[in-house]
Amino acid sequence: MENRNQKSRRGSALVLAVFIMVLAVGFSVASAFLVQTETVDIGFNERLTQALYVAEAGLERGVQYLNEVIAVVTLQDPFGGIDSMPAEPFTNEPLMCGLQTIGEYTVNINVLPYTGPGSETADTLDDSWREIEVIATGIVARNTQGQVRRILKQIARIELKSSEVFDYAYFINHWGWWFGSNIFSSGNIRSNGQFNFGGFRPTVNGHPRWDRLVYDPLTDTYDLQGYKDDNGDGLTNGRDGGVWAGWNIVNDGSVRGQPNKYDWEDQVPMPNLSDLSIYENMAKKDGATIKIGGSTIVDAVLGDDVGEKKNIYLEGTAENPIVIDGTIVVHGSVVLKGVIRGRGVIYSGHNVYIADDVVYENVPPNNGTPAGTSEGQMEAFLNNPNTKSADGLGLFAREHVVLGDYTSGSWQSSVSSWVNHPLNDSAEDAGLDGLPNTRAGEDGILGTDDDDLLEGDGIWSVLYYTQAHADAGQIPAGKNVGDPIPGTGEDIDGDGVYDGTTDMNEFYIDGNGSGNFDSSLWHNMPAGVTNYNQIATSNIGNIHAAMYTNHTVAGRISSDAPNRNLLILGALVSRNEAIIYSASRFLMNHDLRLLGGGQAFGFFLPKTWKTHIITFAFQVVY
Image 1 (cartoon, helix red, strand yellow):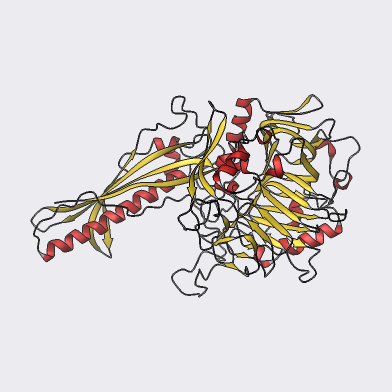
Image 2 (cartoon, rainbow, N blue to C red):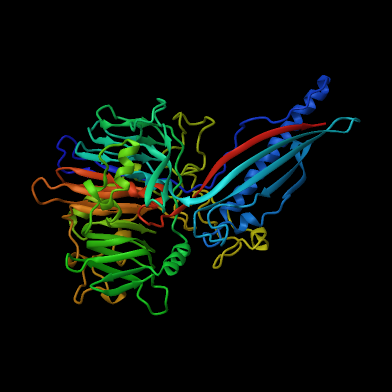
């Protein structure tokens, strides 16, 4: 973001971006349940150690196999591949050291019975999980005395759940630049790379994080559970939360508010929207609609029928607001502005354009923020009748989110300078961590063990579908052996296609390098509109929505009225961000109703995989 009112640093900006959705299962030692002991000689002890190494290698191979299965699943049948895994994928596999065989391992994988939500109906549209038991047996010969065996067992819970990126007012899957002293956040902020405040004095008022938000239908109340003591003071006093970064937090000495700082944290995976089928299924199942003036404009999905227009223009007024109910999927682009009533989300197969103010008819109390950050205050906000009746909107784009009138020269020149900045590089040659400019690793020294050697090597490193995937029925419709597996390796946005750095032409409404477009390709477009500047302005003061893209949020927003603020009520989640603004204050208020997967919104948020380690154990068998 660049604050055009900030005289001390005209180049000040907040330009951020994000990383890749990496499916990973972490395994760590927690406890030992059985160790048999006896008097043994040195040779036997050596074989015990060898058997442990062999078992560890087997466990790692089992975990790798599990990751490979997860990598190829689709949202249409997320647990189908997991439930059908072979019970013993590896039997008597040798562990070699050069030409010498150290031992053999056998791996068993057991999918434990599922008893979670939806188990009665096997409804994979609901949040659900599986518990996976991986058992690795390491076998080493004991001369003429038989064998030494060591067994390692791990149980992990794998969940497909609404992404945690919406727990933040501002989330960037890239480097974070927050330059401007008039930026105010009510809610947590996070980047998967470094977060740089540039010596400016923004205000960050974080709030505690929670494991879950539970709704009790009998009492019609929400209950926050699982308080996260992020600052480690042993207290649950509401003074947690703040700023997170996957790398370090720098130039932050002047940050105001309650800015607890947590750097070198684990990256939070971004969901990808390459497959919208699960959201289409939800839209049709729930009979979702968009209406204006009593007329149905969209019935669940737009663009799925032959001859149906794929793009849509939506404008609401105080007399005739845009009335949204449920999950909507639009195969093309969405242009939206005006008054919103109801609750729902719009998944766009291309770009989302915010052409003017987007405001709720019924705004939650205090613009979405509680009176304080204690558990009682946050729950009181969520259970306030005015909160429960307030409107809510999610705008989720497969490509970009464009703010303001991109046809103006000032918009183009301002945004271009940040989209093309070296630290805003989004080319999918960023290495294993999905972040550019990290080839030297965390120590900053090339030639050391933490180097990201895949970054900038000119090779798009991803996994590909094999004949084994075909034989197992794991290749989705439209894909073939040899095609990239979406979301693997350096496929940061998860679409299975290599992407270079964002091109300014990608923001144009028809991709033709001008503001002109063919209105005949647009559903609900007013007659006579042939240029985007006829329906758009950059003089925007309010955006009431949770916005998401795994690409770029870009815009130049001005506030012509004296002392006018720019307010984002909801969340801003993206990989890259290039917002240049002029306003008295830039306010980002995290809507607490997004907690717990948007349950209090009634939202169906984008999904990611999450893994919890349940138990670890080892056993020695002679």
